Length: 343
Image 1 (spheres, rainbow, N blue to C red):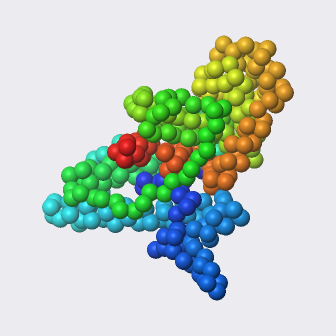
Image 2 (image 1 turned 30 degrees about the vertical axis):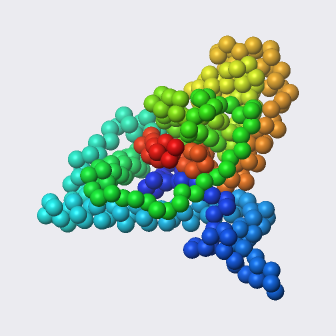
Image 3 (image 1 turned 90 degrees about the horizontal axis):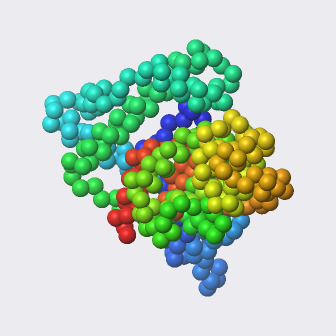
């Protein structure tokens, strides 16, 4: 799980193509070596690497792409800012400072308090008064980062055409009929969320995903995958089982919302109380939960996510493109719009 002090990188997170080259500048069909007359291709190396340690390969290829993409965005941003600053007769630094100050709203005491309360589990027992300065700095930095991103997006819209020629890496995420989902099964864009009912950042991204569903309608489908981080969220695994017990009665998403609305009440008795609150057949639900009927399904989600290089929640794959962390609506929308344009 990401710590609350972690800053999201620009356009963070966009997936991994397991078949893409592990060596910069080489394609999968390139010959990496020869043993006598027998060629060994880059694809064979990647297949063997993936077979030996899929998670390591996925994470390595992901980092390579993310590093290159972040560098690309930084270079493009510098070029756009330099041109805009020149037109204003300012240095790039002065131009950015002036534009960010116009866009970033001040952080209020109420917002600091709300952030503290929403993340109290990460405060290590420190009081609001003790944590307020650090939270304020974090929120200010977050708003300044968002303001810079908004500025760059405006400059891109009004500037020269920027065509990204890099191939977007993707994961192939297998789905099963039992995966809870909402939306058109034939939607051009599928979002697969690896999540944890006890994770505060999964709670944070939930309204963003709802907004996406509302705004994009039948163009998107959302699929849930379990990835409970049991070392730091001891109630998450059983909560994942409970979600599937609710799905047995056709009310996964109602129950999903109930759990995220009550993250501090996820003990087994609480899970049963939440089942009654959303109108489930309590006897059937309790029998399902007590028998650990869906424990294997939850374990399968963890195993699948691990093979795909998932190591934090939430991690969402948008048509296979990885978006890690509780990213903003704008970042998700940018990826979705690119996918719709491809279709």
